[in-house]
Image: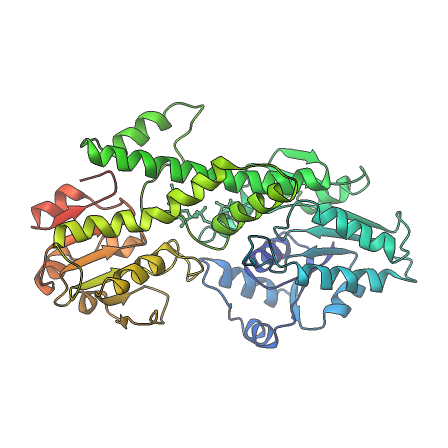
Length: 429
Ligand code: UGA
């Protein structure tokens, strides 16, 4: 199939690379010249394990092409994926200007053309957006048989994007008619997953509700972890105990410094915003957000209690991205923690395996062991494998103090205590 993917971000690039790997001809278009130039040289604008190799492989097979000529990409291909960014606005809604721009451009290309266009929305868009997209085509005078709009949200996680695309739990397809269903099945013929067919807005809702539910699980376990701290119960035992119940499930029950990234915080807010527009209250989602935000202070307070005061103390933070195996620092809890430490007068030293710029006010180190030199405490904000398997003896001898704050509850507390550290986890000691 001949496909155009508009937007060379996370979702666009991964989707394009996987579709090309399955044998489709894929043209990725993006207005960002520097991104496209880098892609022509086989370099990715993001860090995602395995993606660079997949992109290079399919570029050299001539199945994957990159261009800034968006209009050409639209005109030359019958299947068009919209994967442009929908960044958050201060009021909680999403900025849809990129989506609307490309939709107008596609509709403009359809005028006077006899070729059918299938427009598939991958970008996460607020409830009702795909209906608006459909209406834009009708308003441009395009006959309803000349195009189809499909809402086909993505459920991939950064850091395991390729795996998630190849092994989805379900493929959600929102349509207005049955017409595009066979083409969608052809597109995804290489994967085995159940389909969920629904309306355009139904598919948007499934995407938001999925992310809101996962965010709720995280805030739930974080709140339970605080109670565990107060009565010396291990949150890991509790997560194992409740997660064994198949109705609850073991995933997304990892307590820590809370969720971040470009999806959960934005999508929960966007859902609340959409609900408000319809005069629907969302007390549960408000609490999910409130717990997540206060989790940062909860952990900083724990450290303060141990150190008596944070003013003038040197604290090292390992990990800047919002999760491991990515260089994405958007709404990263690590940055919020750093902000809180700086506000309390700490000197903050930082290290990250892939992020190579220092947050304002901090001192960046390119070596993780140098970063802990003379520090009173080490706070680990991201569960990178290299932190788990580091040389703890060296860490201990480099540090001035002996406090480890495990912001992701992923370290072996007994082993660390044997090295002479004071271990502070979240609902875990
Ligand atoms: C999330 C969803 O998991 C994907 O299904 C979805 O496609 C994506 O958003 C999106 O909307 O595009 P992502 O944000 O990449 O994916 O990463 P997650 O693995 O979900 O982690 C999100 C945050 O939750 C991270 O900060 C992570 O550290 C935190 N988290 C996750 C916890 O604190 N505890 C957990 O048990 C799991």
